[in-house]
Length: 424
Length: 156
Image (tube, rainbow over all chains, first blue to last red; front, side, top):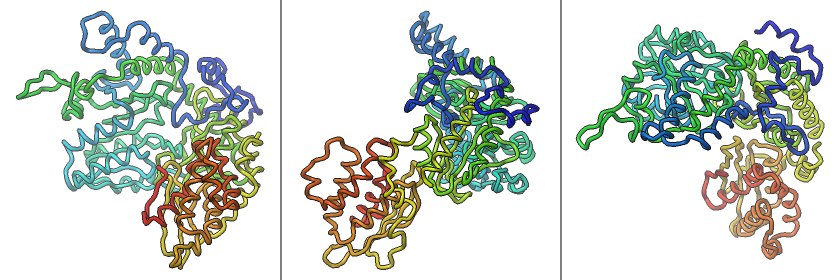
């Protein structure tokens, strides 16, 4: 909990002083935020699905396309060299951002989902066999469930699910009990996209390692909201989605320990991932290139590098403090609306507020608040087991980012009050 | 702020959404189908009871969904009673067109029960909300599957 927490709930309506940094200056970096939706200022609270892009990212990608774009790792010509340098510079920025031991540990994929599938397919099929166990939690995104189910059906492994309590906390004792000599992999989210729960992932990893299991962390919701040091966590794999941390879509990041990556077979075959090819025998490059068959997301890696520069310039700790202020303010104000129930009240939470409204379905909530210019996500958030756990089909979810303000929380709350009135 | 939404969320629709008619398991149903909208998690079961002449004697539904999908299912069960399956299919097709097309074939509308069309007109306001079209049509897709014998349907 931040020291500034007690100030946060006392601020007046529309007062943006909660910011640990100059939020108006930050907002000015995001061209998309200047618009109105149905004649009302856009209030973008769907950052958990995807975040908007600052001018710095847009400019970096535009500059690449306008001045030095070419394919990478291929040509001797000037543009190819410049593109390769910029692409690899993106990788170096990601390595520093995660405090990876080596730049070789950063693999660019199509998206975070592909990162998980890569591990399931390559690591899973090489090192797991029938009877082995994979442990996941009840609050995983479908992307961290289905790849393991596919592997289960192919290999005959066992998938075990750690339950959560009514607040959305991981039941740690149950987790501990599940670990055993058959546990080969723990695949767990760092922050739940549907509930906002921050999982004590360092402890999860420590215990898994005590049992000789490897750990993959789904960091999609964590990376935009907190500083992550993969060496301090001692994870084995960590995936995240650049588009949620103000970077472009079309690229995902898989970090893995270098020795583990180099022990894994290729995921896809093609150009760029080979050392040499003949019809009798093909040898492969080491990581990361072994796992990057074909032309990679070049401009996207450059944009991701710019996004990392951007959030690093503001400081992840400052962003975390700002968002924690918004979380507390939103929780406090939304709790005052009769009939609104917040799902996910874990002890440690990120700035994600999932909620249901008595007598009004989440889709209707979504359509109505949209008319007020407020963008929220409605539905099952690709986490149907979580919805089932709470006996509901859908929630509405406000998820905050670094450019959101208390005034925007007010706009959401005002809209919700009117929705309630409309439906009586 | 919500004036524009009144066109879609009319009192009649809100009423059907809050107090759905024929919201029950139909014991005598001769056919039924499950419908789900994977995008939003809406799930319905539609029950239809046909007599020997292919006339719908009873229609009912159970499930959960937004105001639009529940209201649509509720109104559909009322509309269907007494209709032949061919008429029900014709109504579905016309309603689907009303929800998605700017210029619906007037002749097709003429052929349908005027009373039913008038009620469906209210729901056709979803045309202005493309992502909500599936909410309005899920029950009809499901009914179509029930009387056609396809027991699983999806708006996808």
